Length: 51
Image (cartoon, rainbow, N blue to C red; front, side, top):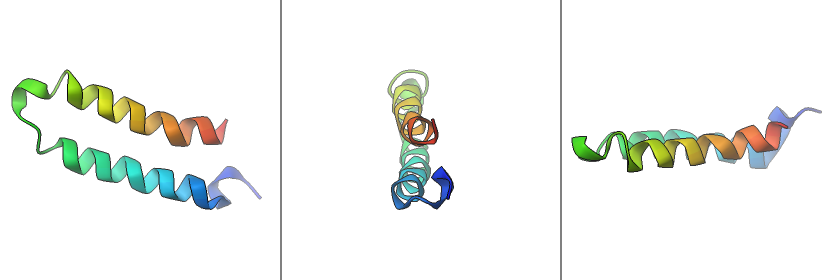
C-alpha cells in the first residue's frame, strides 16, 4: 500500500484540481498574488501526505 491508495490523498488531489479551476476565474491582477498562494497551499497538502 502506498500513499496513492489512501483516500485522503485522493481527496487532496481533487482539492488541487478544484482550486486550479477556481483560481482560473480570478481577476488578472490577482494571478501572481492570491492565485499563486492558493495554488501552492493546495499542492502542499498531497505533497505532505506523500512524504
